[in-house]
Length: 148
Image (tube, rainbow, N blue to C red; front, side, top):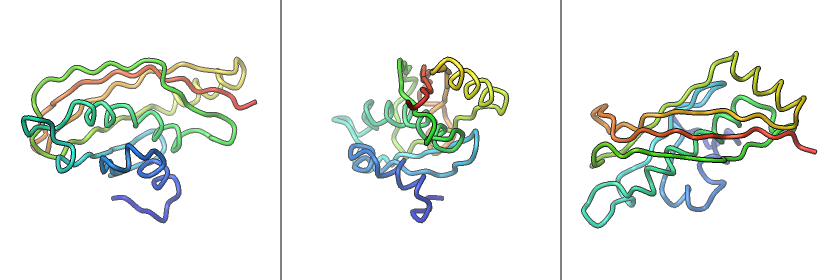
């Protein structure tokens, strides 16, 4: 669960005002893995389901979260270059996303960013509702850049 004594989690949950207002929470975060949640309460649209923008944010934030947990952000910083999402079914409960990246991919990204100044990587996710139904599919193209 969220641990506000962990500065990494506080930055993910509270570092962007919009994300803080929507109530996004870090459920689990470790090197190469994150699970995030967004509540339905406060994120409803005009028909009572979760607003598409809230789902998009839930799909996009893992790129930053995984960067915080997997890379030395004193040396690197992440950006997003492209994001797509396919909405499969309405969300009427809290929503979750789990995304992981392998140790081999972490090593590849770090090596390329260290030598070339930047490295692209793709993260794909499934947003699920409380019953485990897939409600949306996401694909993000991120880039890790070397700080100068």
